[in-house]
Image (cartoon, rainbow, N blue to C red):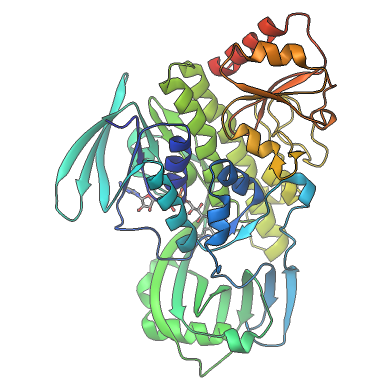
Length: 497
Ligand SMILES: Cc1cc2nc3c(=O)[nH]c(=O)nc-3n(C[C@H](O)[C@H](O)[C@H](O)COP(=O)(O)OP(=O)(O)OC[C@H]3O[C@@H](n4cnc5c(N)ncnc54)[C@H](O)[C@@H]3O)c2cc1C
C-alpha cells in the first residue's frame, strides 16, 4: 500500500514523486496519458527550482538532458521571426542569477525533455508511476484516502488505499472540483491555442536567439517559439468560434506569417487550446488531500512562474508529509502547507500579471495596474513564509525564520543548499560547540560553517534550516540552555507552530 497517491504525472506530479522518494515515502502516481508530455510547453526553470532539483540529486541529469530544444533566452518583439524589424523586450540571459545568490542558474529547456529525467529518477528511487491510468473517484476519510484507478488500456479498475492524496491534476483539477474548493482571482484573461508545426527556420534565423517572441504583423499576432525544427505558436481566439477554425491550412498560413517566410515548408502537428487564467484556489488542502501546481494556482505565462511555483509547492509538502508519516510531526505541520504556499501563489500570480502588463503591454483589468512589479530575483528567491514581510530582497537577506536560507559556499563545491538536502540541519560557527553537542540528541545533522555572518548570527549562534531550504529558527548568539532551546525549536517546527 502506498503512503501517498499522486494524481497527475506532469511536472508537478513527477516532482512530488521525486521529492517524496528522497524522503523515503512510498508513492503511487497515476497519470491518464500513456507517457510524459510530447509538447514542449514550459521553457523556463528558475534557479530556485534548480536548487530543489540539486537537493534531490537530479540537477546534473537535468543539465545533461540537452541539447536543449529551445532557441536561447531573451524576449523578442518582432514583426516577423526572421525579418529585420525587431527589438528586445528583455535581452538574452537577463534571467540568469548573479552567482552569489545560488549555486544554480536558471535553465531554459522544454518540458518534453525535462519530464523524462524526473520520471527516470523518481522510478530509480522506487516510485510506482502508472501512466495510462486515470483517477475516476476518490474518498477523503478521517483516517486515509481511497482512489479508484482505471487502467485505460485494459479497462481494469483498482481501488488503492493510502494515507494522503496529492492532486497534481492541473488547472481543470477534477479533484479540486470534487472537494468543492473555489478559486479567487481575475479568472480567464483570454483563450489561447498553442499550435505546433514542423517548420525549420534555423538557417534563416542565423544567430538570432530568443526564448520567445511577440510577433505582430497583418498575418500573425501572437507569441512564437523556435523549438529545434519546430515552431510553437500561441494565438488568442474567440471561444465562440471554436478551435476548429485552426485547420491544417490555417496553421500553415499562420506559421509562414509568423516566420516571415511565405514559401516555408510547414507540417501541422498539434493544436492545443488553453485558457490564460489568473486564479488561486481558496484552500490548498481538504482533509487528507493536498492541491499542488496548476490544480492550486494558475497564472499567465509571463515571468515563467507557473510550473516553478508548482514544483516549489511539491518541495514544501514532501518533507512535511514524510515527517508526519514517520510519526515525527503532528497534523499542525501539514496545516502550514496552505498557510505558507497560498500567499506565495497569490504574490507570484500578481507578479505574472504585472510582468505581462509591463513587458508586453497586455490589456489587463484595472486592478492589475496597482500591482508593483518586483525584481525577478525577489519573486524567485525572496518570498517568505509565516510572520513578517511577505518577501525580501535575497541580496540583503534578513535570515529570520520564514526566509530562504542564503546560499554560501561552505567548502569548495559545497553549498548550504547541499546541506539541507538530507533533512533538518543546524549550522553554527567556530564557537558553537554547545549547539553541536545539543544537536546529537535530536533528529538533525549539525555542522560548523566558516561564515556565520551570512546567516545574521555570531560564531556562537546557530540557525536551523528545514529540508526545503527555509530557516526554521535562529539564535544570534550562545544560549544558556542550548539543549532545551534547540529541542523546543524542533518541537515547535514539527508541530507547525
Ligand atoms: C504557453 C505556456 C508557457 C508556459 N511557460 C512557463 C514557464 O516558462 N515557466 C513556468 O514555470 N511555467 C510556465 N507555464 C505554466 C506551466 O506550463 C504550468 O504551470 C505547469 O505545466 C503545471 O504543471 P502541473 O503538473 O501542475 O499541471 P499539468 O501540466 O496540467 O498536468 C496535470 C496532469 O494531470 C493529469 N490528470 C488530470 N486529471 C487526471 C486524472 N483524473 N487522472 C490521472 N491524471 C490526470 C493530466 O493528464 C496532466 O498530465 C507555461 C504555460 C503555458 C500555457
